[in-house]
Image (tube, rainbow, N blue to C red):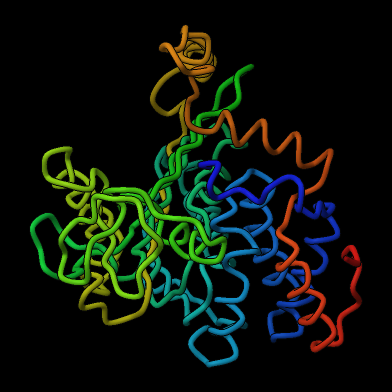
Length: 360
């Protein structure tokens, strides 16, 4: 994560992972989620926090989910069901449930199908936000599988040359196992920057960089400035000259594989809320597992140990920094902004939940 999005060390309040997990679980329970669903929601959110994906953790997203539940837009106790099923594929109706809880169920179903068939593919529709894509993809790694997760994320991105937003942020997560090296875990929206990071920038009072967003009629903003009231997100690449047509085409790909394939339709005309897609590839259905994992080690180590270009400290691959952040935060605690901790104190008092968080 870029430094501008991190809580300054001098004001950060560190909280133990388990304390925050307990608090978040209790919040979802009080809001109507069964215990198992509440735990899954906490698992998904705290995965983001512990690995430094702060844009998708409790600081940035929990308020949004609470508002959705209290307004009736999110069903805290969904009666999800499989509406189409085959040996290697399935379609799930999420019953307006958060992807935080339906996502792990769908990914585990894809893994189960891959155990039998080599590949498992599960689409889900009539859902809501599913958190960090990496969390769902990463679940496959412990089963020696490659995991892929994607979702149709809102309607905020303007296609190249377009005057309005017509595609979603549409994040994609991919995770692959290794032996000794930290596994490859990629997670990115198909916009120039994750939409949640714009929300985070506004909350932290930091500027957005050139090429991240456009004016409300789609013109790329190419100077650093505070987050404006009205804007559209730009695709990955920002402008046509540096590849925005590739970014928005990738966003369309995610939409086709999630919304259209699930029968919900494209994001701008969805008939059933948010749609997701989860895939699992059983490595030994394609090649020898040891060969694959050794090759991954060689690949990742070669990149990790590559001499950096002048002015840079080192070369990273997707998942390495998150792995190192997780080790540090499990030992030292997760850093939160004081405003977030104060918000939690007020919320826990309002909901009648025991408060183990630090007193400021």
